[in-house]
Amino acid sequence: MNAFPRYISATHSNCENIKFRQVLLENLNDEEKGEKHHPELWLRFGEGLGEERNRMLREEMLPQTKALVETFMNLSQASFEEGLGALYAYEQQVPRVAETKIRGLREFYGISDERSLEFFQVHLKADEYHSQAVADIVESLSPESQVKVERAAEEAAKALWNFLSGICEASPAMN
Image (cartoon, rainbow, N blue to C red; front, side):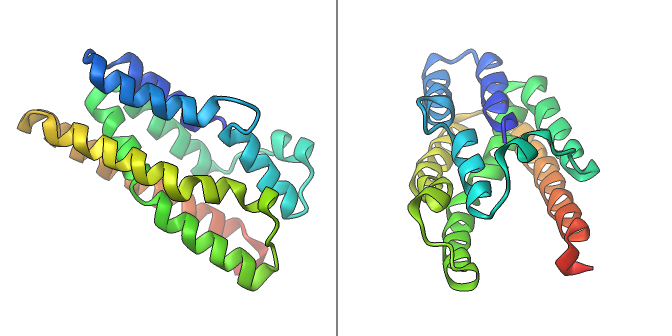
């Protein structure tokens, strides 16, 4: 919940191009600015599911979650290109995931209040823009840099898949 803005920040700090840094800064501002910053919206979503805020903040991470955070942080700190690859691997899929989550939460769980769904509603549009902005940066890079981005995106995607498998394995409904 709190890690994603740090990936953007680390990638931003590795970037020498001011125009690219401005794109990343805008993304970071979207993540952390104001009272409705994205970690706060995630906590509100959890509360909409009936979870206590303090419990969510104290909850131990699954091993797959720790591995995901470490992978993304390592890529984000390694180089601008690798951080960009990790960000793209995540953000390019978020708008479609958010749309599916909203529909599923409404249809199958009866969750329809805006406070609980706002995290996903914000990401419907914001990450559509952010993923396109990152794609535009990638297209402007040299072929060698694009290869680094692609390799990092693949590594990040594998960590994301492993993370989701961990959630599935830990879910009482799946066991």
